[in-house]
Image (cartoon, rainbow, N blue to C red; front, side, top):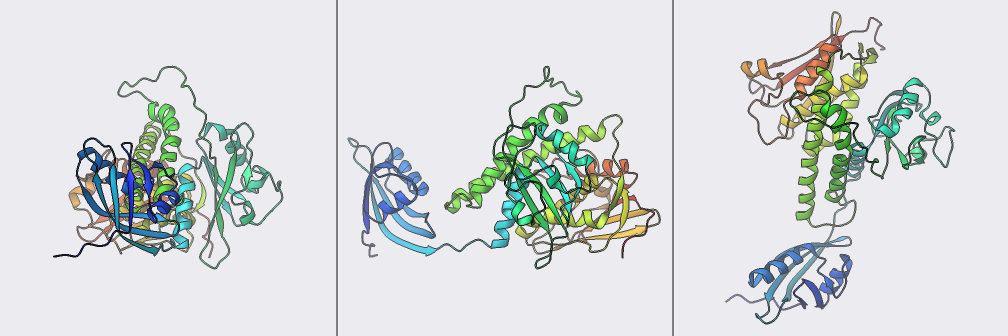
Length: 459
């Protein structure tokens, strides 16, 4: 006959699942998880077990997990509901094991924080190594005046337009500017600067990604006139719903990611997984909103891009950097080009297309594989080629992959079937094209073509 483990501690709960009595170490765990004694059970898995035992009048026993400061706790708990005339349960602790929690990889933690800031940023800009503005984009009504001023001041230091409150507009090392609070003319919210350096480990930054983030939600705006949901109505998602939905959804994603990555404090694995599901669902919804907004833009009458002289190598490296966290989580390496290739196209739109192509390559490639981004020039066309080691596409699928809402029979991956359609429309609007070369089982090569710049590429 099996020998039963000795009782290490006893506790009791009432009909409202409040812990009314507890011996150590349960009492200490209750307090360290933010609860009181007496008070509602603060250990999530214990609360779930006690609640089920009380509701179904069943004696339940199982292993529970919790986090106590820097330690992971595993305990065997038995919960026995009292007689019909009494509410609550008797709780018995029979085993208790603790182990130090391994700290997250520092690089991974930094990448997660950067991803959170990107989710909720309301203005983003690209800076050179001297913190001078290369381009700016923002959809926030609060920041339109600032975005216009910064766009008109390309080549000037960003601190000419965003002077940190504690330092003024003088030149500072980027680490002193990262996280600095700023005030924005025309906005009642408080803002902070986020500077993400673009550099290889051990090297000085060759540029920066600038984000402007507020911890306060944007003010609610009443839409002008009545929003019509008549099919085929123009401007609904892009002009009315997208700006209203984007920030709340982004904040849901950011808060869920904060919980998942335990940046807000210790959490059992089961609840971290719930938060991950919330974050993923939010990203899918946010992606759909963005795709529908872009669809309206590219299909609107008179749509045109704003061509400029750009370096496709620089755009490709930035796109690969933005998707670096996603690739590492799947064990996929992304090889970005180191050379330069001059082209005439809109930086923001090329970046949008490449993020879509590299993101698709990561999504549909096997773990441990490689995605390669390389540059080629063919006569008057400059090309960016994104190659993966995924399942590839049959010839019939290649003919329809760029069609609207086409997902090639896939389900469950959350894609809208609009990304490649929009990307090809953007490529053609810039005087180029987007095509695919593939064979089943041999991966795929998506080729973005835009007009080459007549000037010689830097060596």
